[in-house]
Length: 274
Image (cartoon, rainbow, N blue to C red; front, side, top):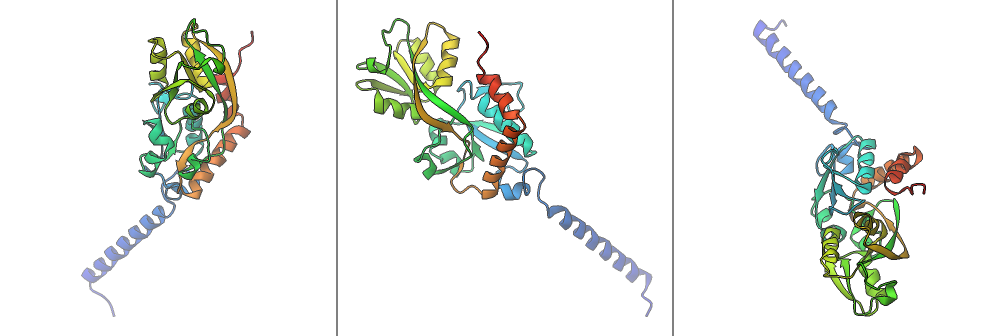
């Protein structure tokens, strides 16, 4: 039976609408671009963006940098930027306290996807965090004030020693700096200001950071280094999706294999010829 012109127009309109819905559904099936399996599989808090939390400044690992895509640079951030690029993601960085980061608070609250802040992998932290494969081996060190008379950790009895709260440097000082008065500060900038003001006589913390302090003022010297078998890892929530952890580790391995990791490492830590 032939239908009327009005009926035919209605059928055509319905067919077109159905076709548009089918196209839209097909377009959504792959998720947002970026990352292995799409953003949905990675569980990013902001699709298309890898959001990192970091305690800044902590040179040479984290520093403000207006010319960098994220507004920050340093070894941790540059390497993470390369990881984000590998995953075809943007990188955003939020400045948070180290204590909140290493305890897992900021990650559990979905403030960020990943922590990049020279975070040493420890069994205690692994109770709340999931770590990437290690990306940096670190040492602890002792930086002293001018004319302090301090030559080693054995000379710290009765001395005010600055440490950063919640760090492995603080733990090392608690275990090894016998008789020292440990003074806690939230970050390196406060430690550096305190030793310059004469409020403390020494800083015990990660070697690369003390190296930067000594470069800033050659009157301050590193008198000892301590091997602690510490390794840094990027921190993720304890319940981070397996796809996200795998994507970070795979990208990190790719950067090692193609030489990008070494280029970034050398730009911060390579020893210049004498």
